[in-house]
Amino acid sequence: SRLCCLSPQEVGPTMVGDEHSDPGLMSFLGATKRNMLGNHFWEYYVNDAPRIVLNKLESCGYRVVSMTGVGQTLVWCLHKE
Image (cartoon, rainbow, N blue to C red; front, side):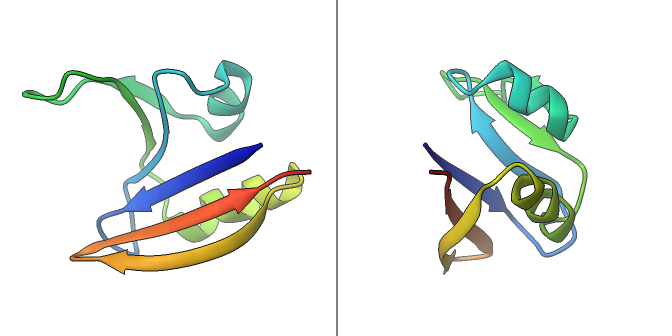
């Protein structure tokens, strides 16, 4: 399975999923579901810095396969066998 994490900065908050994400994994990450004004979709986020989220995901078997920056946002794509 694949997962993408986004963070507008290196200290958080970190977006960790969308409305179709695994609720068990979102609960493990301590994520909160929200709908930002003007968006027609829901997203999960945590206030943790990305390094904390990435460490938690690694403990579940996820591995980073790529990382890039988009403007002020950092994006990590992870994969789990």
